[in-house]
Image (cartoon, rainbow, N blue to C red):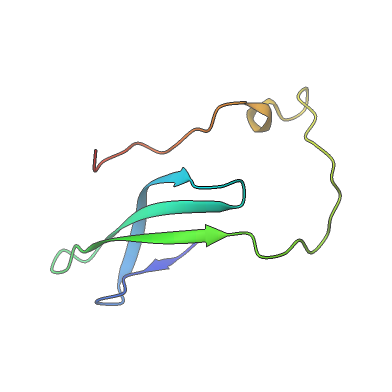
Length: 78
C-alpha cells in the first residue's frame, strides 16, 4: 500500500500500527523526504465485503494466520 505524505506528497512509510477495532487499524507513518520527515497517523478500515466466504484459515496449511495474538510492527516512536 502506498502512503503519501499529506504535507509534501512524497512517499511515506508505515513505522508501526495497532488494531483499533476488528475492522479498523491505526498506522503511524513517517515521510521519507529528509527535508520534510513529518509523522502522521492514518486509519484503514474495512468498508464492505466483496466476496464473502466466511471460512477460517486451515491451521495446518496457514499457521501464521491462526495466531491468537495481534502482532504489531516494531514501534520506533515509543
